Length: 436
Image (cartoon, rainbow, N blue to C red; front, side, top):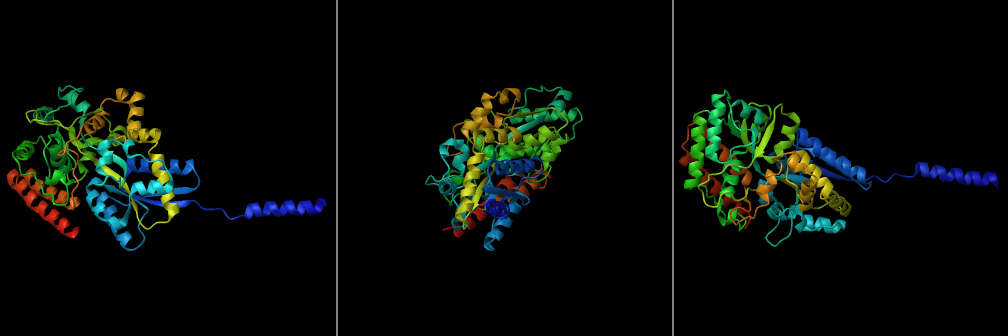
């Protein structure tokens, strides 16, 4: 009997050792976060994967926002699209129009059986990614807004108050002149020209960038920047460029590196630059609100959203959607969302994450880190809710092209704004015809 029992026991042990291991369901996530932000994305995936054993999120860097979106479209047509795609805000209208290609996040959360309340997210963020009928289409991830970064050490050397960044555009010009006099060769620069100097500029001053409530009212929207206020601002920047007070450093976020290195003393750009500055800058830095013109009625209003959201692609297995829903639920946890906000400078995507951060004393310990939040939680208007246009990527490219002529002195500001309006409307008309 003993031998028989031993044989049975041995067989049981052998079966356990050689039983097939059930592999976790993999979720392919394509993103555009490099450097310190890439490490953040990888850490989020690792932490989620370690929190459970059913699913494994696999993040893959696919280049810039433009490049990853192009690659995903090609992959979808070839039948091998990723499960989750990070898309910057200017691609929102295009993704919304690709109805057969996406699975609305609200549906994904329902499939996963995960608690999901759109009201838990910061209104200005959630509203941007919500369809006219009220369904939330993508998951807010790295939402940012435009802020004013400045080098406190450079300010001190130029005799400027290190605790008082300029709040108006005349003050920016004055500070730039003092920085130049102190020997700074790049007093002021900007990243994302269209986003900071036309799109956010418009919302901050409560004027339209495009008709139809900046595209939220339909695909019949048309560019609306050929106005006296827009002309005044671009002319002022052109004058600063001629005087060496504003130095153009290239398209997209090319200017970010020049601020982090200390080459440029002031810049308008993404609040999401904070993590990079905190980690790599060799100087004391500060964050101020986006400058405005004090004589404009209604200014400042609120700035518009930037950054990106996570879109779920259609045609995947139910288990994959369950895993994605669990991952999104994990990212929405107050402690996870708050840690991401504090690490990167991106907005807290949920109200609970903001309240947790505020309660912890983080904003008091790190002055300026709440600027982006304060700019975004203000009450929005039909003119400042955000900008959601078709072919927006192409529109931003043509804005860069026309503005580069202004910064070099080859194009007059008025002519540039008229060209942006004409060329931008051609892109909008093309999108409207394709989505009737």
